[in-house]
Amino acid sequence: MGISLTTQREPNDFNASKSTVTSVSYRHSFDNNVLLGATVKYYDLSHTTAWDLKSEAGLGYKYALSDAFSLVGMAWLGSNVRSNASDFVYYSLTASADWKLTPIVTWSIVNLRYRNAFDTSYDFDTPAVGTALGFKINDANSVSVGFTREWSDGKVSDNEIGVGYKYHF
Image (cartoon, rainbow, N blue to C red; front, side):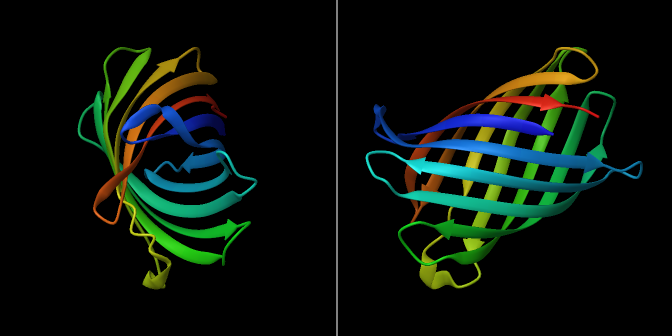
């Protein structure tokens, strides 16, 4: 179970905020490496009273290439509820390559996402590329920091910097 706080910044003006994102997530890894996940993200859009609420459920698989290196792929279904526009459903496909550098530090070398609405008139074709570092505090607790760049209409739409905390059951 995790919680994170992310700031979305304008692509060409890092001082300008686009939104603040608060996220709560849960992911379970079964013994056969199948993954089941859920995420809820609240977007407080800067300089407005508008907000977005994105909820996702996903299914995936983690493939360990070695004790230190793994690949993860997930397929997600989501709902985007918006305060100032029509709601819609979407899908996303994500992949990551993770490298356990030490027993404490894991580098998520690359995180990839392709996301789009089922009804493409919502103009939600928003791929992303990111990277993150995770730090294991103990068997039950970890923290992370990450950077992500998102696109919309073929142009960079924002840069994200986030911090997170996870409790491992």
